Length: 120
Image (tube, rainbow, N blue to C red):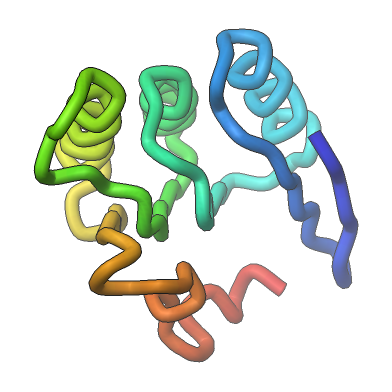
């Protein structure tokens, strides 16, 4: 995981492909002192679902913006991604915007200008 501090806000860069990734992220988020976590361009995995669930149970404000959904479910991997994406939507409601690369070629297209400005 890569960490960058920007004007008093901690930005963590990583993916959630293992339980170690999830544990490292939870530790870093908790240690940051923040009460909001915004996950951008993080493909939906069961490990990410676990992190989001844990943060919500601890009263964090959590948002997701991603474009890796796989609604066609052409194989096991796509089915796992689609299931994890739906779990994230179920947990976060409107705070989860998970699209596809066909609809949103870049995750930046899923973020409104100033949407998270109060973070910085």
